Image 1 (cartoon, rainbow, N blue to C red):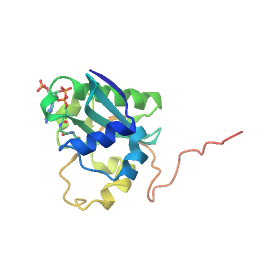
Image 2 (cartoon, protein in one colour; image 1 turned 180 degrees about the horizontal axis):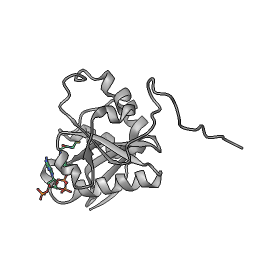
Image 3 (cartoon, rainbow, N blue to C red; image 1 turned 180 degrees about the vertical axis):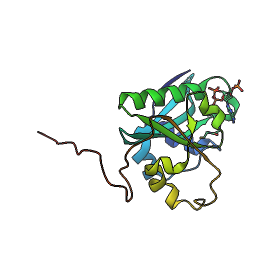
Length: 165
Ligand SMILES: CC(C)(COP(=O)(O)OP(=O)(O)OC[C@H]1O[C@@H](n2cnc3c(N)ncnc32)[C@H](O)[C@@H]1OP(=O)(O)O)[C@@H](O)C(=O)NCCC(=O)NCCS
């Protein structure tokens, strides 16, 4: 069992075969495939998960899923480790997620926070979500809470990168 970066066929075939994954439009899969890592065993994809980058101040773990019949054998842990390593690789100081099972994530040093503590997530997804005022998911973070945000009405404090200087 090992993790690796996803390629398009992993996700296209995964979404067409697995009942546990929400079907996504092809364009959305293509746009996001580079966020995904998969767990592979004997040539089969048995799980996937994504790391969405907002900036060095914040990234989000999303879409973590292991085939139901192959859970409790360490695949979920491998995925989280791979996504946290990816966050480290990009020098990200805070990783967040929304979940219904906080006990799984507290094993990786995630702690519960209010969603207002991660404004980029609030602006990207929550404000568009029909469950905005009836959210049953728990927000968690690992690392330093972000001191800045790049979306919404929050002032931009992230310095612009100069290209070709
Ligand atoms: C959460 C999930 C990814 C874990 O994958 P996994 O391969 O079983 O994880 P691991 O084998 O590395 O770790 C298993 C441990 O995680 C914890 N765990 C797993 N599922 C859990 C759940 N639903 N609730 C609470 N803890 C859970 C348990 O401590 C478990 O230990 P155990 O095997 O001794 O019972 C998998 O259960 C899954 O795909 N669930 C459905 C989708 C989902 O809920 N995703 C999370 C969205 S934020």
